[in-house]
Length: 166
Image (cartoon, rainbow, N blue to C red):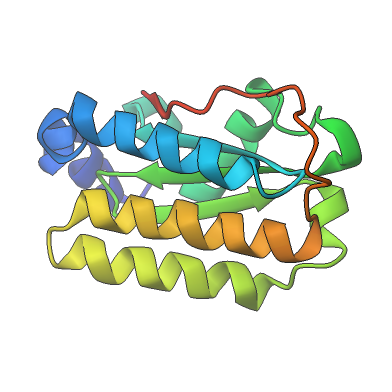
């Protein structure tokens, strides 16, 4: 059992989620997601979680595991062209995970996703949570536009643009 992770999830600064991601920031993120989706055929979903439950940490669930669970639960995999992407932030552990559907995984390398998470992490370290998430959403949108460009026609929005805060 990882006592450091348990302590981090129980006593870390996770309770500051509302301060780091107030409604105005969530609105700005939603607008950036929507603007990106106007340029590509992908679907981007943002999930921000304050912390993992004790039982999950004790069972060894990692941020990557949780992101994969949410990818499935939120049906990010169930999009046209299999081009859904989940951008997941676990605030208590300062973890950022990006999970991409199989259509995207065929053409986007892990290094490209890691570059996005590194840029986000740099902003978060400096306390710029709004900028960090907007950077991640913008860069993911640019990557999707490069590999899955839109055809200029309006299309159905398959996933909510507003971040899910857990």
